[in-house]
Length: 205
Image (cartoon, rainbow, N blue to C red; front, side, top):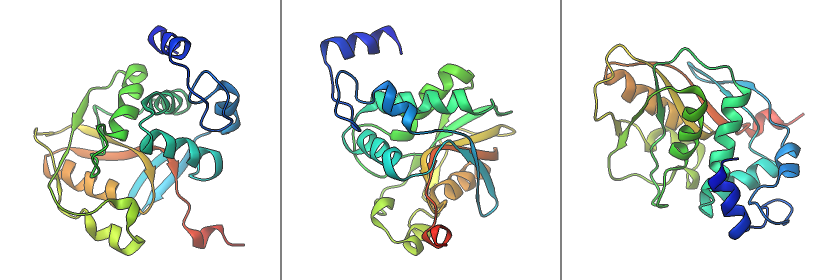
């Protein structure tokens, strides 16, 4: 933790979103209980890595970060990504833009924390107005909601680009990010996320 974070916890204590204990939004014991570890993830032709599965306590933690604006949790999760995954051979990191108005972009919070450890420059994608919040859509609708809506304000010619998001579900967001990077001249080499959502068909015995 940084000195600023430690002081914030001291003077502005928060209850842990999992167990309710003070003074941090995610206490050390509950962070350890998430059992985070690298896992390979494929979505169509895109290969990536996550450090957990979007369920149980990890889902609670991610939802608190995104819906309650607890950015310190996003920073902590980004640090866990950087600590647990091998630094990639990438020249740029690109965070997923958000279609929701939260006052912050979750993937950017995570990316900034990753950058602190990996020291890789960051570039941004923009998203055209319109469309709906991905989390409120059915799987088939997610696949078309973002098509051709992202773009890069800067040329990415010849750059090896790693995509960053908080959770990968259908992969629609990451697929559109990869398209936008390629259109700008970059080479999308894969992605990293905090968690992967396992399709229900894969969870049945």
